[in-house]
Length: 83
Image (cartoon, rainbow, N blue to C red; front, top):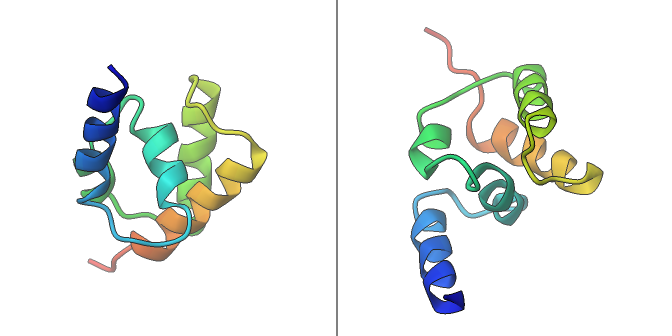
């Protein structure tokens, strides 16, 4: 079972850009979402903050340090794109 979980984690992480906070994103967001959910979304830092806080309120597994890392990672790699 542990090997299967490790394989699933590896598959999830290969699509996301490398960088500080990636592990926390996979842990917290990957418990409910596929990497495509993150890969197909762009937001401002405040938008990511609001979304991450909403997900944590709904049960995403992230403590205060992990929350900060997640928001930083998402804001760096998936910033709001102008139309």
